[in-house]
Length: 299
Image (cartoon, rainbow, N blue to C red; front, side):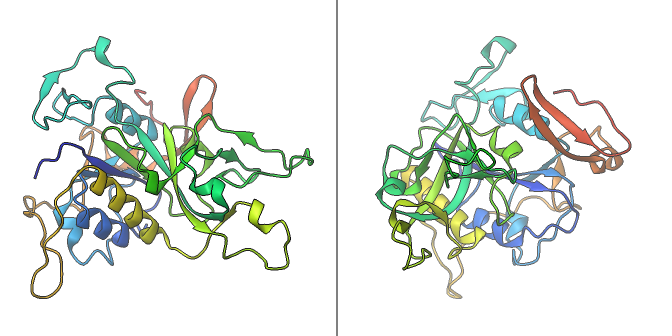
């Protein structure tokens, strides 16, 4: 079924045994347009209960490739659907001159669940920091400490209930409990978070209500489902129907394929894909970090 607004899941897949089953089940339930994984083209689908067979899962060898794919409107046939149009079938061929921020699908980083006061719930958003451990966080460091001083990222994070969407969205999610790695956060166009009353705060801490701390009450799949609920409600997705066994009615299963997912560039060998381990951010752009067996990226 075509929707006027598409949503994607973008997740790192550094190992062939990475467990993605529960996230894939959530993506299938909320009718994700595509699941984009970076790294290996194999993963652990346990927990998906077969729902991954109803998803279009695409494996990319590098982060540069997936950013370029989203920049082109996530269309592999060289055409681009107007991201500002309500007509899901309106497409045209793109040219180099048309590659601009107006055409690319924005990457929205999911910061996770945080506890705090009214600031977290405000539509004005909160600042996103790069902590000393190499992760993006909403918790400000000690302003009086030079050692723990944190850089501020250019984009704010907004509470999910404000539904700060205007077009298609690609949600970048980290399975690391510490949050989004800062190298991944730097490719995001915006951030969202699930705000909570600060129930994790110490009752003896008199300054607890002015703090923002990462909450441990919700797991990654639950946070992802909350995000997709708000996006699909905003985009007027039709609510799922349920069968007699109380399971939601699935979409039409895609054609039988031999792999769990398909590769974005078929001319790359599996050995080349396996050698890519990540990237770092510099002022000159994205720089790939590779293990032995380095190959050139076209990004």
